[in-house]
Amino acid sequence: INAEYGTHWTFGQEGVVRWRVAMSLQSVSTTTTALATSTVAICKHWIRLGACARGDHCALRHPADDDAELIAAREALATQIANAPRRRGRNAGNASSQNRASMLRSFLIDTFGRPLLKTVLDVAGGKGELAFELTVLNGANVIVVDPRPLQVARFMRKLEMNLYHKSTTNATGYNDLDFAEATERAKSYQPG
Image (cartoon, rainbow, N blue to C red):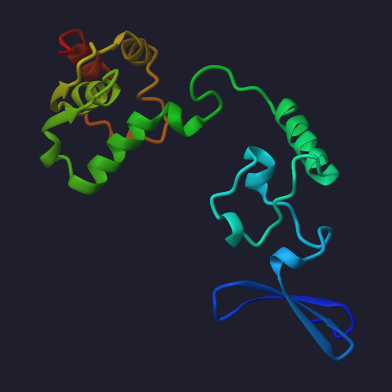
């Protein structure tokens, strides 16, 4: 606390947040609702949504909709959102989501070991990339349970371009079959 003009937040016995201002040697204690509007920041949830789950227990301000500072904060948020870089497509720009099946495959191999992954039941397998990788790159027998049909054409193209075996990918050390063996196995791959 600054002896001249310091601030300090404390929690009272009743769980009420109290704000203390030390001026000279005197201390004034008031609840957050009695604070001057310019000393406490506006709640970020109040700015974005106009509501706060904490309600009266929130330590931040919840001003009226016509408050000039709230209007300025909402305009700044709108500008920030408008100037944010645009993402195109699902998971655009998220590099980790593009290789999530390979990352999950490497996690499974590290956690359970290759012997336990010779037969795998993939529930809610989605498009089937994990099943494809385990079958074609690791020689596992994988059964996919999903109401949608598997879409493996994209994974076949990645295999044909040798993307699963290039040293730039993190999962190359987890491939049990080389490129030629994986290509042969992919020819007989029957999703279903």
